Length: 292
Image (cartoon, rainbow, N blue to C red; front, side):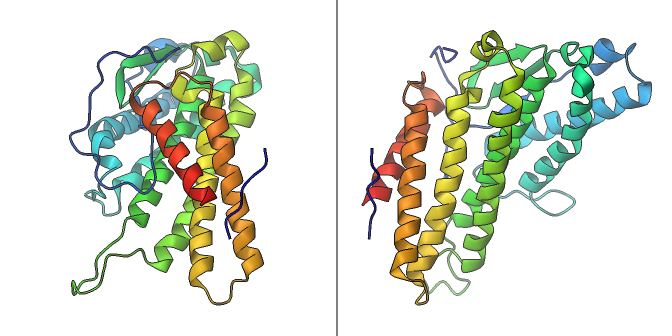
């Protein structure tokens, strides 16, 4: 039933290694963690005080949550004092912040170059990147939103044992269906980043972006999300007596296509160490697996 398809910013150095990576169904190549920004100093005499305070409050909330929970957020489902998962709370904080910070780009405003934004990949703290460009902030926010969605999908797809302890761990059909929607949402964020945000950078500015925001990496992550979503659909089709062989074959071919394209996008990028190497190996494994 398988389908065969036709046809440096990362400078190395010592990297902090997580003590435990836990079980993985969806590989997430490190969350991008924001550092603090002083909006008052940069924009205090340019915008109303209430707007500057709103920007500060929204981003500070993200900085605190991401720095406190980032190291464990991809491996555990931690509950907040308000109930609900940290993943969802941080994702909502980013959703609240994004339209406000996008206001700094309105009509080519000069304000988009007034604030220096600083982000770092949690798996590569040697590579902090600062840019005085609000589009860098938007790009980093979209990347983090997508990675949070993929982390949530990973949690849903980890097999769970039954309460009586007699059955083998498995993933519920509800979790599989939910994960498909999550993968599509993650792919949408990444597609938006590639098609609508990256074009705002000049060629020289793009070369200054960290490798985890390179176009090839963003495209590969988008295709990974689509590929894993189709993978789940194929698994459900195989389990269903109503799914025809034609449907299963179509899904199998789509999955091979997505993983091949993801691998092609990573091919010429400097991902020789750290999270990049792991991401490349994961995509290669999934491509080989899809062809079986």
